[in-house]
Image (cartoon, rainbow, N blue to C red; front, side, top):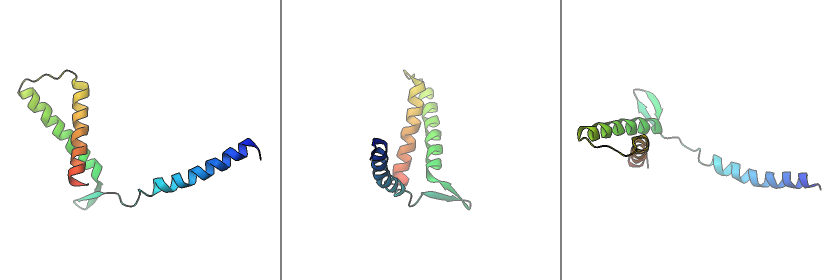
Length: 91
């Protein structure tokens, strides 16, 4: 048996369990019913997280607080709030 055939056989033996493992997580996608339409839950969490980050930015500017790196701080805050919303509502 050539080296290429052995590598191909080994690749098939590794890819089959990996493929089955990745497809095992596709059982149910969380969705939310809003006025008869089903929206993905992550989309609602992302929108809420961004809106809460905007509220936090407004509150920080209200109190005249300057951040060292706002380019990193506000997107990080939006991600943090998005993931927090996901954990609170869709464990």
